[in-house]
Image 1 (cartoon, helix red, strand yellow):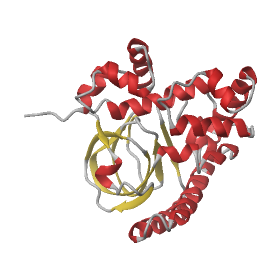
Image 2 (tube, one colour; image 1 turned 180 degrees about the horizontal axis):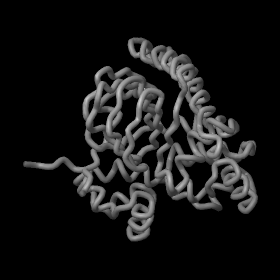
Image 3 (cartoon, one colour; image 1 turned 90 degrees about the horizontal axis):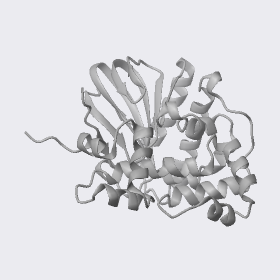
Image 4 (cartoon, helix red, strand yellow; image 1 turned 90 degrees about the vertical axis):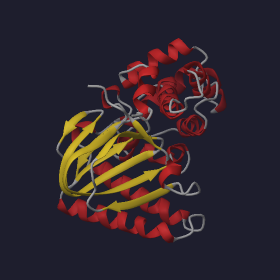
Length: 293
């Protein structure tokens, strides 16, 4: 059965100037298959449902948590008393305010190593015990309360709560999924900032290594040890996440989407897209567009 994938855009739910947002959804209803142009965390507090996701179907309950990088799809069906928190934040924060978290073996795993592994397709799932869920709810309640505050003057409050939330969730990732304790190098942090801020730029290994002032072979080893992917593979993933947004635009041909995402070869773009998302860009577009009666 074909799955229609709708995309949640930041502007559809949140004010553009806000980069970190949380809200509590009591009595959450069924929700169609969708993905996001931002990073989303969903924390279930009550009830259950049929959770359809890029990793398969499940029936989660209180304490189950999911993190989705852009392009990772999911949806809710057959809900039974479902209540949950949603926390969303701009993916560009990964290359700026959050890139130091690569040095945290738990948060680094949560944000980069696990969701970027090929088998994860951009998604992480974990479970909190009663104590952990209580602390998570307190952090998210504080974030929700900031919705009425001016974001520019309270950005530090938003960021501090998000960092606490990510740190706590990272510590609850399954032991077998935890990465090594490799420490990041300033060159890796600088390269992540460059890629996350402008994934469509015509980066090459040589230009990235040159910008961060490290010899190419050594740069690849440093980057892979920390992120879990070589630098060009990480660039590919970020470009694909960007492409999922551009494919919603009917006025852009597939070749235009490829070019705006950073590819000069549309055929290579299509092969990479199919490898990561299990379908061609054209099929993804068909499933992403609204159906008409």
